[in-house]
Amino acid sequence: MTLKGSFLLYTWDQFAKRSDKVGNSMKVTQAIRGLSQSICIVLLLLTCSTLSAQNEEQRVRNIVLVHGAWADGSGWQGVYDILTKDGYNVSIVQEPETSFKDDVAAVKRVLAQQDGQCILVAHSYGGAVITEAGNGPTVAGLVYIAAHMPDAGENEADVGKRFPSDLSKSNAIKKTADGFTYLDFAQFQEYFAADLPAEQAAFMARSQVFNAADNFKAVITSAAWRTKPSWMLIAGKDRTINPDLERWYATRAKSHKVEVSGASHAVYVSRPKEVTALIEEAALNAGRTEE
Image (cartoon, rainbow, N blue to C red; front, side, top):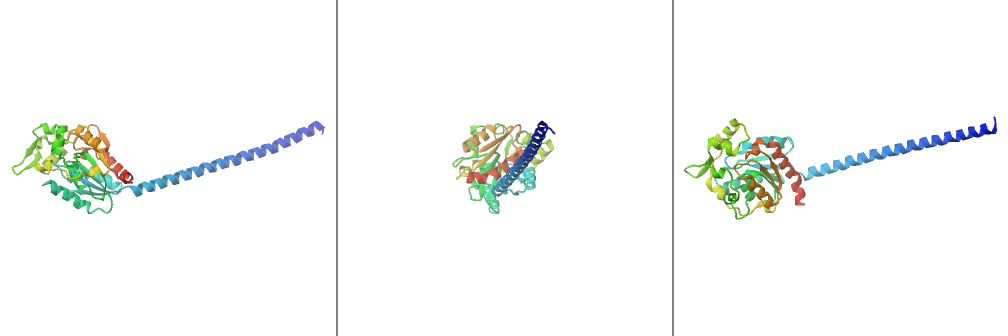
């Protein structure tokens, strides 16, 4: 073999060895990179798991639902079904609507049964009730669903004059000889439940709870939303409470708010998913807000 041939053979051998080393080095690098990616994924999953566990620990698990005037607790069934499926403990207050004092007492009675912190939710006139009843330490947050939200020294009848509703301008509110109000059966759907099927609205009209007229004039002594985090759902097509009043309430209280376009005053019945989503948002964040 010639010197040139020997040199070429030596060079090729060295090149092959170096190539092997480079190949092995690349494999090691790829292996390290793959391991690093795997470790990052594991750490990310662990972090997410930890945050999820922390969220679950902070989440308020008890929900108390309060109906408004001319209704009863059965209207909450759609919301109740979703909340219980999602693991919440749900209580529904059946306030008598015989007096504001009686209604506040009914809410406090249910609050006293709660095992730990709760989110207090109300619709319509029930908003005034929870504003008065929700000052106790077990209430972590307040959720107002197309509801009144008066301040201390105010009553919903007078505050409602800021933004009169279609209902207040109508002749649909009737009064019994002994001082209880109700909505005219024939006009109930138009002003209270326009986005519900006629049959369902008719049943609600016929099963409505008559409300003592003086309840709307009851003066708040201490407004819970002044010291508790609050959320407001605005019903875009509400004819019982003017949506502009609901927006004004939420702005004044610095509430977290959402608006459901096209929803009637009976939004808690017609749009249970949107209502539940806001309640669950409150349940997740009320504890954090208090920290």
